Image (cartoon, rainbow, N blue to C red; front, side):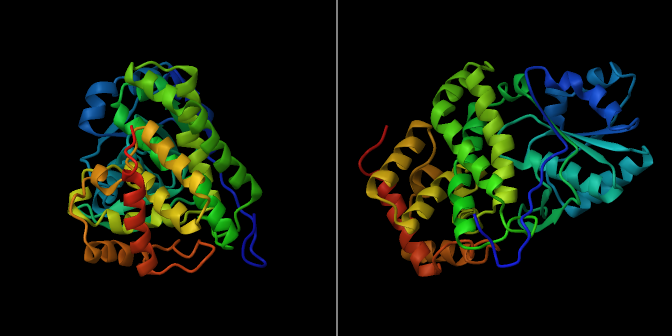
Length: 371
């Protein structure tokens, strides 16, 4: 791998990664190990009703009590400020996030504001946000307004796979869609001499992790999806969760992103795609990126066939867009060009080329008919 001349190679990791059935039971001991005594829990009402009792129980085993901060559903600067005030009143020294991506980002924002320790306990494996420093902030209408950063990665990422398999299988599948791009994006970032999310050159280690993430999905993705459909945490599930949460997170943050994720700037702006999950959009984006990389036809066909076997979208219609025009594709492509990592591509991209590639990806994903 390579980077700009003179750029330092930088990689970041969470302080501790713990995964497995019943992992949440170790929360109290981990909080004590961090030297903390006054935890606050960030969760929404749905998660709290279903799982909120697990956290107080785990903490009480270590003679700790917790103050709950109610997350209302949107990660905004105002929500972070209000919950930070509550956490300050509770004299919090560690923030525990229990939930999905927005809950996690809000908890990150609180920990950043107060300078406390941070424990992330995801309840879905739908993306790789738990391991990273990134805080994606929206407004009340769900428009992205900022990406803030923690000064360090979370102190602990605690992934209880008994919890993960209780979530709808669609979320697990979306996590695979988000992760499957990292091999291609990290490689493009390196070839283009781009920077990762630490402002450094991607080290070789990041590429190795991104490649391993892809290999695990190829080997175990289908079996893991079948097991999650039965709400069973099998060895295949454990391997894929590690890939989609840990390896994918390390691969993107330290390896860098490229076109597959840049496309979300455009795709997410289409109202018809508002119901499509992040990882579903990214999965389609990998087809677009591969087309612009111009691989052998059999390589592209094999990738599309893999997405189809995993139940991931290979067409715009599968994402929810049935009316496709050149003007709409250009709108998506123009917004895609505003992504900060659009330059992490070996050749220079243009809006016209991206619009063409989206149309070709849609056609390639649709024909021949795939299972």
